[in-house]
Length: 261
Image (cartoon, rainbow, N blue to C red; front, side):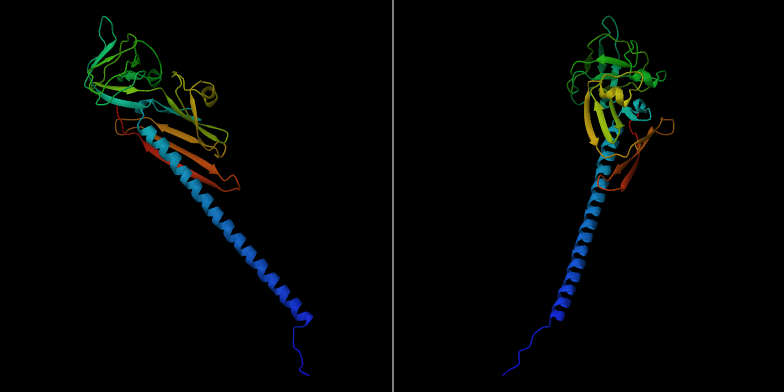
C-alpha cells in the first residue's frame, strides 16, 4: 500500500501566521502610501490655492489708483481704475458739470467717478465727497470716442494735475480676514476713514469668499507710500491651514503698483 504524504497541523498554522504577517505589512504599506499621496495632494492644493489668492490680489492692486491703497491692520482697501486719459479742460461755469477730454478709447459705465489728483490732496480726500475736491460725483455713461464727460451733479476740482491726467474709478474694494475666512468686499460707499471688516460686513455691498481656511490673524499687511524714486509697494502674507491636520502653508507677496497719477 502506497504511503500518503501531506502537511502537518503545525506547518499549516505556521503558513497561516506567515500569510497574516505578510498581509498586515502589505495593508500598512498601502495605507501609508495612500496617506502620503493624500498629504502631498493636500500640500499641492494649498500651494495652488495660495498662488490663486496672491495672484488675484496682485492683479487687482496693480490696477488700483496708486495713491488710494491703504490698510488698517485687518483690511487692504483701494480704488480700482477703469480708464485714464488726458483732459482738455475741467468743469467750468455756469453748470460745472462737464469735462473735456481726449477720448478714453473704451466705454466707461455710468456711476464711475473722475479723479484729478494734485499735489495738495490727502489720501482721505480720494474717498471723500467734498466739493471742491479731487473726486467728482458719478458720471453719465461715456462711449469710447466721446470727448466730453457729463457729471450727474455740479463739481469743482480743487487742484489740477501736473500732466493734465484724469482717471475713471469705481467704488472701493477691500480684502479682509474675518476669523478663518478671507473676504473680498465691493460695491459699498467710500468713506474718508477706512472701514473695519465688521463694518464692511453690514455695509450692504457684495461679499465674496476668497478662502475659508486661513490661520487666525495670519493676514498681515504693509503699504509703503510712493515716493519720487518709486511707486507704492504693498506687502501681504497669509497662512493656509490643513483642515485635516496640523500642517500649514505660508504665502508672502510684494506688489509694486505700476500706475502713476
